[in-house]
Image (tube, rainbow, N blue to C red; front, side):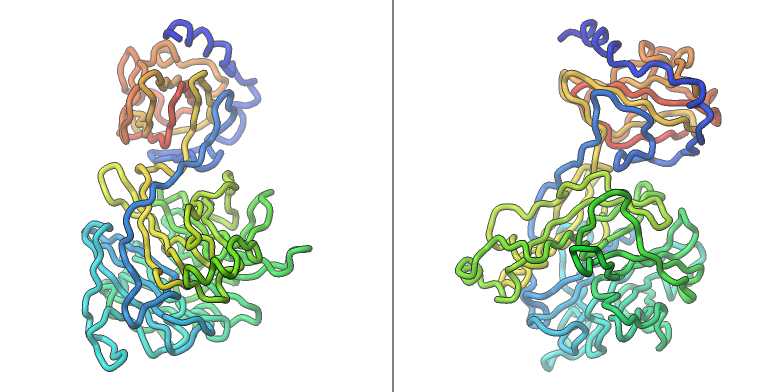
Length: 488
């Protein structure tokens, strides 16, 4: 199909001018924020295009959990990227047992690239007669069960409290911890920040962070919700605080019209290139959904209580408040080939996505749980590449809602085939093309770039349209668009 033929076909796909009433809808104030195609926030209408979930690429094992204080039941991993340092935290315990018992410890590893990890000898806690270990917390049950740190990005935070953490179980409530370096920790106070619970709240990895978008601390934590026909379903609730000390009573999160599912860990965090969008690569637990039989379980050495369920991971997003968006119900991370991957509480992602290259980001997954080969693996994606606006060879279009922006350039993160392309038209709020920025004026965007400005025959400068209500018409052929951003 030559270019002229395709443009003729694309003309048949055009969405046309929207009725004048549409211009009266609420205008999205984008400013210069980067927007990802992980939900329908920008979308007014699509024809021939779709939102497509991307597939993470499995990389290397970054940590084999084989130290005496680690073992088959290590869990609740957190990765933090702080300038040139990567910090890794996780529960160490080698045997099954009750939550919050004295045998649990909190382990630490360090990396300068997010790929190669070392376990430093910290000399902080004596375990098995030696301090030659990588433990940052021990002998203080129940807090090593689910110790979950974060780097506090609130402006003006004291240096001694740059790192904060939550830990605890239903009986203790969630206590707060602080640290200057992420290694040496102390409790903020002996009383919990979030109170003890009557039900099985906090029975998971409970996390917090400073929200730039909401201008407060937020905490996402485990609760249970009664669902008819399912009993108690592992749920996510949220609490907020202006100062990390006084917390509001929690509220259950909602998921729109998505079917209820057991979400074992929520792993919600602000996406580092668009912090107004919270991204969650959540562990989806399927109780009683058994894949392997007893003889197969014996052959891989899994604990006999940990093979009658299975799990994968799903992608959730949120833009604050008490709502998650589940645009994608499909598995984001499938267990994969191998009996070892189809056991209980396996394939649980670590908290946080981090940048590990100029065009690459990574997340980490706890694999082979309850087995001798338990380890942490790295998975990679292109930068911003959780999901995309996708069009096939025959082409497709999207028209955005009415929006305002700041800046004078429109930047795309995209990939096309050799035959594919992307074009952009800037429209008035009523859907009419802005003179000089019509589809026919736009130069074809071809290739694979993390950052590239859109250019029209008259140039790239959009300063005359900044602050005005406009729409974008995006035309794609055999292409994926991962993110857009207006910028100076």
